[in-house]
Image 1: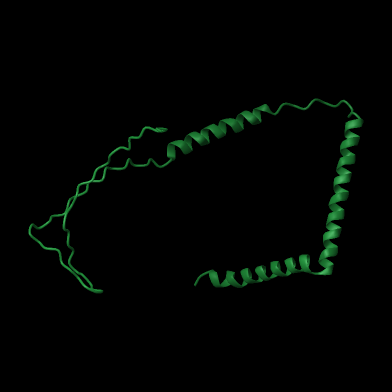
Image 2: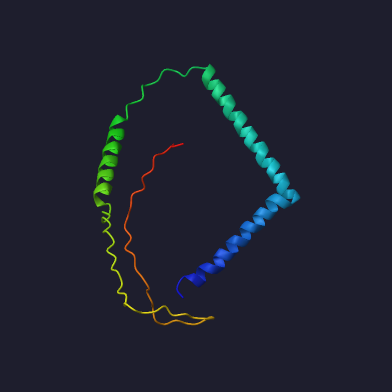
Amino acid sequence: MGLMPAVHPLRKKVAVMIWRLRHWWLDTPSGEAAQKYVFAFSVLASVIQFVRLAVMALIPAAPAKPIEAIWPLWVINLIVMVVVAAISYAMRPKPETPKPLAGEAPTVEDGQSVKHHFGTVWVEDEFILAWKVTGTVPIKSKGGKK
């Protein structure tokens, strides 16, 4: 059977462990405590980031060496992007234009009568009483006419 029997028990164990973790997180008192600790930690991290932002806004940084321009990297990435787009456009599959349907009218025998079947029966021979050639007629309407 290949690799599938070896993967199946591992997949089942992972699913069971995810279910157990979800049960612990949502339905147990220790999971509720863990939720409170995670919330407190995230609030503390947010406060520290806001304080750092305020300090950086109030105290100007010392003048340093100017940042070197990295525009050559942007130009190279832009060129690569244009080349890849051109290659993908050239390599895309060309859809074939649909050919008009050429319907062949079936032959109808003159003088053949319609068979009447009563009840549930299995009919093995096909029977065509008439055939009408239908074409496409564009819909012409004057919109908004009252």
